[in-house]
Image 1: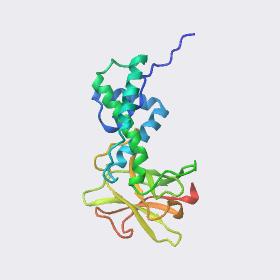
Image 2: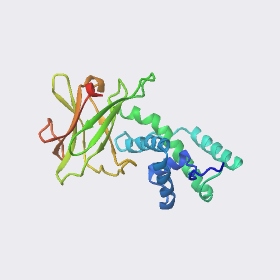
Image 3: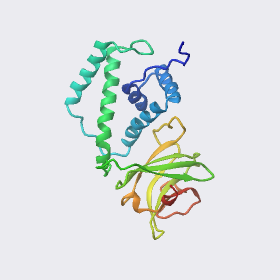
Image 4: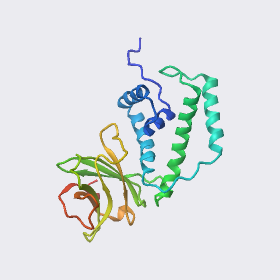
Length: 241
């Protein structure tokens, strides 16, 4: 029986890394974008790269990657050439392939370094990620973090605000006092939306995130507020997850 399923291009990790970095020419970027829309696993892998790339806007100055990366990169590219792995589009130049392989390895290495720069670290165990849905009339979002972390992923889909205003993320303590976790605009500076239209915002908390009971977003002055003063647009509780 003939296979009538549509042919999907083979998307490699270096393609996803280059896409996350905005380093692909328009025609190749369009091929990757279409493949991501059809393949949930590709979308998940892209989000991992985008998390790292966007985190660099908030991280400390980068540390040079280990010299061993160069040999790993060269070995991987030589292996691809030797085996002649198929591609869905014409073969690209050696320099471009090498650069994209470098992007994939560097972004992967940064995935290990960024949490340390941001004052947290990957969990020592395979503890499941906590996800809290945030709902409101203006949009929606969700917060993700591992138990013990003080930095979280905030994915939001909200409209832009007038000049002079910003969104502020609040972490609600059991005594109903609040800590500020982020002040941000939509769209964030130098950022692009995920394929589903959400933007990634990094949240920093003074204490582990599971110590809070709820989370919310309000509209505040562009410089932020010491406590909520504007209308609440999104809210979610740990008890509701």
